[in-house]
Length: 204
Image 1 (cartoon, rainbow, N blue to C red):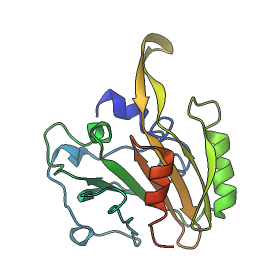
Image 2: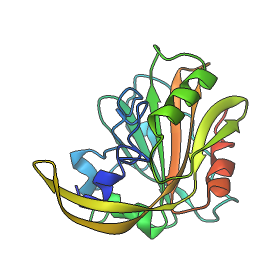
Image 3: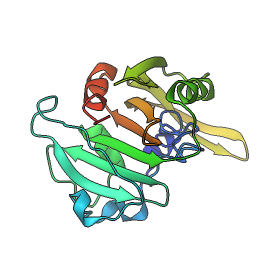
């Protein structure tokens, strides 16, 4: 996995690495893509078996021409990649966020509480990040979000920082559907409002 995405995984480590997700499950969220990222992944949910129902957003007309281009999963999470171009490419999926693709992650967790409680926990978990965190509402479910921001690509050895370079981090919105007990996040190099509009199309 490329270094950029490592930072993008615990929220990608901020945006995609919090506690709900990113174990991505939401317990230690680890927003990482499986080892099959560099292969030609399925392009529909019909070709993959999941232990819980997955609700998809409606991209068009918010993002004209965008459709589901790759479906990936690990033990806890389902990764849905949306783009206006095919994603069967040798460089893998992590860089696709920087090429305009949208990543939607779904994770089922029957042990989580109501959305307001979980959103506050997530907000507390991510305090101290350079992202400007905001509470949001997605069809009655509480969540958090942030605009794309400037992060850092840090290289450490035994706790000592050897190198640190600025790196753009994607925006994101996430919420917990406490009816289905499923956590969703929508990430991309887009404004938080645009990502929120996408999240609002995920059926209640």
